[in-house]
Amino acid sequence: MQIKPFRIEQYFGKYEFTAKYLLSSSDAESRSIRELLDLEPGAYERFLDHWCGYTESPGAPWVREAVAGIYKEVLRDDVLVLSAAEEGIFVLYHALAAPKDHVIVETPCYESSLEVARSTGAQVSEWRRSAKNGWAHDLAALERLIQPNTKIIYINTPHNPTGLLMSANVFKQVIALAASRGIIVFSDEVYRELEHDPRMRLPAACEVYEHAFSLGSMSKTYGLPGLRLGWLVSRDADLLQRCLDFKYYTTICSSAPSEFLTALALRHRGELVRRNLEMVRRNLALLDAFLQLRSDLFEWVKPNASPIGFARFKPDRDVFVFCRKRSRNWGPFWMLILD
Ligand SMILES: Cc1ncc(COP(=O)(O)O)c(C=O)c1O
Image (tube, rainbow, N blue to C red):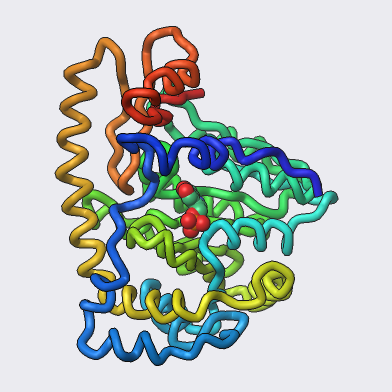
């Protein structure tokens, strides 16, 4: 397997834990294990007594049950628990894509969604969006990219890096396009449930199309990336089984303490989301006001979902040089990077 360096993670590796001010987090604010255990009477004792053996490879049944509860008409057996969404991306592409296949990836995107697809040897096309037209989705362009051997279409909504939701109409049409050709939809929904206006929430892809996968995670909306726990949900039992067969080679099963804490957190996810959403709304108003004040330097499409946004640094300067220079005093500033 050939895979390119994961540049964004290398960048984080260098600055995330050393910068004075971190302006580039991609997840909601976290909390301590104590705060999680405080959510439920008796949880502290139960956690200490929790068995630290291997867990079931698809995920402990009660964790899968808790994850299924996020979705409509999804059963426990439709859920495959993974060690965070990152494992989901790796497992899904490698279980389902081969050199004879073609994969379409919505870009710009979280780097591994593109590079892991390429690492399977499949031919990969980018369904590219641009700031120049307000990050619009060009459905005609997507249709033109489809080939007879297109196996998977990767989409991401709410979207990293823009923090924008796909419109309900575009989402419906992407699903219809894929369904009409039997293409698998791989829908990265790690920011789902953090829409700034919850009425704008889209259905999960796994709810509306049998050959779709919804990718979820404790990392982003729920602010618990240290649990390293995520999931793939699909009503296509055969495809899900192929992902499980691949997982036996990656992690076999998930972390037992993380499964305990995940099920606990999901039982209280309303509370977690409420706090995180409040924080996002408050901080977004401040950041947006700052970007407007310095509109000589910045422009952006204000995000409507997730805790992230993507501002453009207008001066014609190399942003990496700018970030490195600033990082000595301010911390990294990579949110300025643009196509
Ligand atoms: C869109 C998207 N998908 C997946 C991931 C991976 O998340 P994790 O492995 O922490 O669950 C990230 C992380 O930044 C992301 O932004």
